[in-house]
Length: 584
Image 1: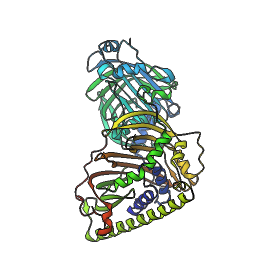
Image 2: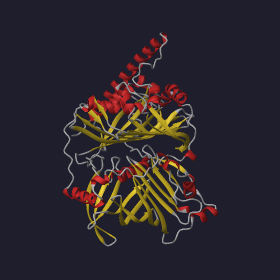
Image 3: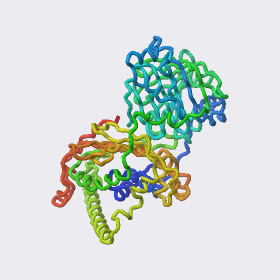
Image 4: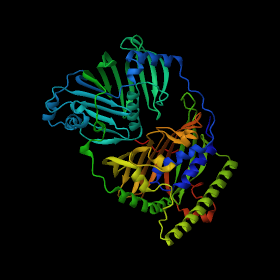
């Protein structure tokens, strides 16, 4: 089925009316996605994989030890020695440290092994080492202690991070972070039940790997990250993988498989990472050994003490009116690209819309100027302008109504915001905040922390139930009192009316990025939404939408009253496509 433009507009309009504040996008995620449950949807086509894919994956699972054994793998750890780096024996880690080296090679050892943390090589290690760990449902850790060639990378279920050979640590965002998350999903699912795990697996064809016949499949994550996987035609085991991981091209060739607790594990690994080649011999492999959460978390040495979040959030909330007022000085251009998917997971041709926009009372008001590269006809322009004027009138009436309501509440000594469905206090109680750190984002110093559901919070309403399913990462500019970036997603399914009406599926997410414009206010540069909803247990919508904002210009919204239509519709460079680079 195809989601109509009117359906999308209706959802976006309701979302904007209910949540004007950019900070409240955390709650907008939950509220907006819940509203999707009210849409009518056509039947979902049955997802069908080719017979080749099903047969290949079945043979692979059997060769690995059987689906039953694979399905019981909760953790996997490989400890190895790096025997070659670019064709040469690596320098001893102890020699590297004595020479003043450090970074990932030295710092990983300092993490210790408490609570299951890694750190397989200490100061006296005799060779470069490699450690690889996974843990259900989606934890991932990769560590190379090899002097100036080393790194540590991880995904902790909420955020991805990397420590380079110089000891610099940072959160991975944009495609880099999504690739790391995709790697975590791939290694933990072990290609069992790809449909359930929202992986799209397609047949590519026959191939050769080190002179042996192989079959190539492509595995695509829900966020679009792709991995090429090659299966040996004789053994049916994976012999090679290629993928971008954290923005770095990787090629891994596996050999010398041995059984560990009934599951086949490779004991020789050839890893090409960027321009570097590593040969690794696995010394020890362990399945279902205890691996603590600290292993995957942001390093403690880089964490900071969180400020009083209640006080910070209250300040941000209180500053929102000033932020909304500053936004009204700007107009810009945006390009929205929407992909919907067939039942087999393949995307349909995208719909691309280009609009000009400005802000009114904190709400983005957009005027469509192009659709799929074509300028609107004169008649379509008239209809669009009439729609925008009607929207402006409605927003102004709502603002007046809210102002009167707030005045009455204040007269009675009540909190004007007290009637909102979900307060910031509810968000604070419903979520836990972990891994705090300070980083640079778009030239500004920001406070970054992960958030996850608070298992002790007991929801009483649908909205509270939705909030308790949210996890993710947030970047806050404490000086400007605004959100610079947000990556929020559902850590579990959200059933509406017990799933009979709708089921918002795990992984549904929204990503928002802003930039500090004219040293005055944070304005959006990028938004990405992945929606996966099933209706009435048999119908569904899966769609991805990205929006890029650009061409910000000064604009006074008061001019609307005199010219009868939003300034910027004619003046903004409607024909110029947005050229904001994809966030890194």
